[in-house]
Image (cartoon, one colour):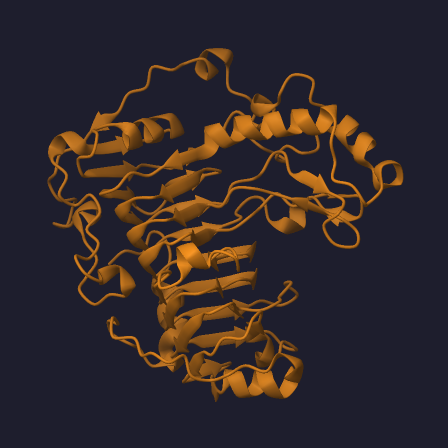
Length: 435
């Protein structure tokens, strides 16, 4: 296995299994699960964040018996997504299904050699002034295209995807919620995709950088999306396990959940985001005003962000309501900021709790990228009421932030006292904790 492959990844399946294309989708009935409850039939409650705006978010809750699927492999999952036309559907993921079970070698274009790639583009040979090009870069690109086709799964409108029980989800896949309406993701453990073929860009910064693709979940140009009670994490492949080449970390992760390109009316609730660097973008470009202005209305509530380096979230343009979240900065983890304040954003962040390790200042919880006012009230840091804007402005005066987002959220369910948020969120957020 070449250096770019997953360390310790599962071995290649037998050839017979690799070549198997006959997939079976097992249908389930529409009766409720034990205890009289079927999470696949549940819809977003009224006033539960921006995704409840208008007609609300119901996903595939109206699916008939012919459009309810239980899947146990990535191939079955992708088939279920494509089946049934435009009819509402419920897809129940049973167990952990692996999008890259064959290993990275299965995607390699013939002739691609990572060691040769390193030799060809070593800065001592190539320099830092020109983007890489040539045979090995072309083969890397072709290999990346093979992986792209394999691990991306397009989620159609009027769909609910729900994990079965406490230990179900997706390893290494990228869920693409693109240009659709009315989608629900619940009770899934999602391990972030590993980019098998990051690109070396010698012109990225003073010393170059490895750039990767693939977010775990992408909401792109879509409306009425509810992401609830999931666990999203780097899992078996934390950044600390990644090698270094040319003096830079061989970055194989991108985002966990990005909401971009004119997406609107999204609620992200009771999730656990764990051990990741660039976690969540809301708006991915300063130049996307044509798509994003007046949109990107997103609610984040009762989520846990633990071991997160930055982007929890980074916001551009949209009216983002963030309340009752718990931000945990662990000892010795890298940490840059939690909330990123970007162009024309209007962040309303109240009633949150921050647990910061010793030596981490509350001033770092906010990061100013562009001039934009925000509201940040009744937030607690290590159990104490803290004016995040005042602390930030006092300690980082070159990034003075303006107070007052200019709007007040009305689509909120119960707002808990921030003092109880750490216990409440840590015990109830994430996959396997539906109540």
